[in-house]
Image (tube, rainbow, N blue to C red; front, side, top):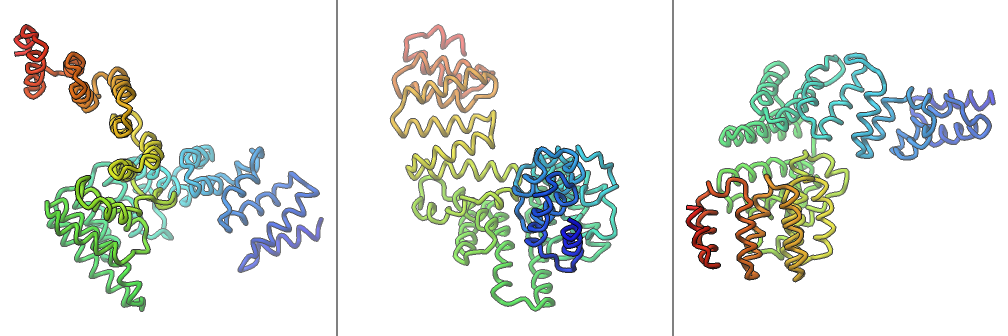
Length: 424
């Protein structure tokens, strides 16, 4: 055993550790001493470095004492497996106080961001003071969290302050453009994007980056310009930008996905759907790429995946995408509306009506679109009384002119003029 422990120590202290050998040696020790904490820890860290996160977690399963000593490492493994709630729980169970472990603070900020707790994430980033952590990167991450939390003005201020102190760079300028977009300052955003692209070109030149890599890296700036144009009502120009970006086949899947999503949103359901379907393959993100998106972005992608499959009559794929949408938009009426549309496409009108009625009854104060859709559906089936009941159940129906007008016509259709006069 002494020889095995000596070998394990030598392997772990090597300048370029052989992680496979560390695991093999640790396994030999554990075959004789199954609860040896040092061997378990060495094996865990080796598996972590080999990106075998699930296997690493298995080594400390049912070993709470060892697991507690590896709180940060366990949290990181869970984070990489997109198990963010569990990762946060592991971090909080460590008992580490704020400021004691910079790595934990950074990981906590990232986990909170992935969980959609943007304000808390920004506060953690703001609290980090460490000479070894890149202050520019901290500013970028804090700004992103602030923008997602609904405070783009402070997000922009953070980046301007960092640029003044540290000198500007491409990442800071790009993220400043994102903050300006959230503020609604489109002309300012375009200027920031121009600055970011110029800085990126300069940085690539200094690092002797090849032309192909340079061009690939420029796509993200063009796609964001396209989004600004889209926000400014320049749909045709934005569409051209997105199509050009997709033709170049960006290596960054997130960029390709955003371009595809925005292109689909521009074209809608009635134009160039076949071409849109081909270009929107990038909407089917792998888990690692999707995890980088904000909560709002994930929701938009989930909805557009459903709509694309619905419009192109891909029933099976639409059902699959709906499961994801229901998870992302729990409590919203949108999944019910998409599922109802899918049932209608399948000529299952009774099921469609029942689904909408069930949602309307369960959410009487928030299901406006569901109730209006239900009324339209019942009217199309000749059920005027049902349509009237659906419209009357809308919160504040008698204060909304359009609904009142519809009710009057429906009352006339069923010869109930008394009801029509009461509405007026």
